[in-house]
Image 1: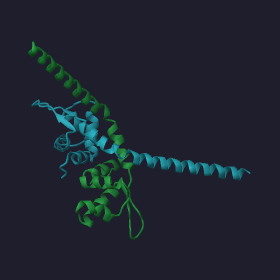
Image 2: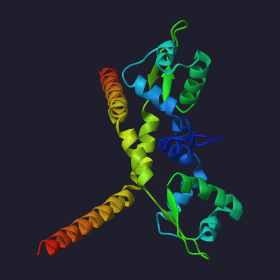
Image 3: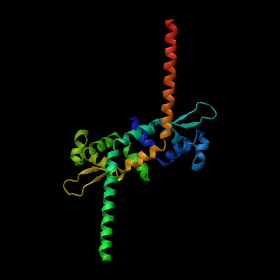
Image 4: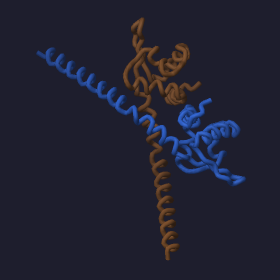
Length: 118
Length: 118
């Protein structure tokens, strides 16, 4: 099990259901029952996912005894966003190279088309 | 095991050693032996991490038989960056609220200090 905060966040996000729960909470806080609705999942299964998200600090839960609403906490998502930012130059270079390659192919195709017309 | 690309990337990044390997490759491609050096880890252990990164498309390996250099592939990091971007308004709101709260505290402290001077 990961112990550093960044690893815990990445691990929590490595599941499509947990990411869908975050997307649901982006439209407002709601109860566990409301979160479970679209997933065709048992409440214990949803609770397990919520615990993982809560441990990663991605959601927080109200303290009301009957209705403990969950709400999104986007702080750890900013951490991940900032972490990926350091690699921006690498993906931009990749797309620049891809763009240059595509332009080269297009230019060759145009030349080829012109020489066939002659 | 996660099967969708985004989950595979998140799972691959949920480990400090694997993130350190990516940071190492950001300064240029290198061999498995060179990658292993700073980690005090066996080559098989490093190879296992490299396989996880390769499966996630985060690194690519050369085809030379003797020296298979690894290089960073930042494409999946852009996917993660773009995915977190949709939550930007939430972390910005959080920091705005925190800023407002701090300003409120500072203003109260100043008033308190002035009333004690009188």
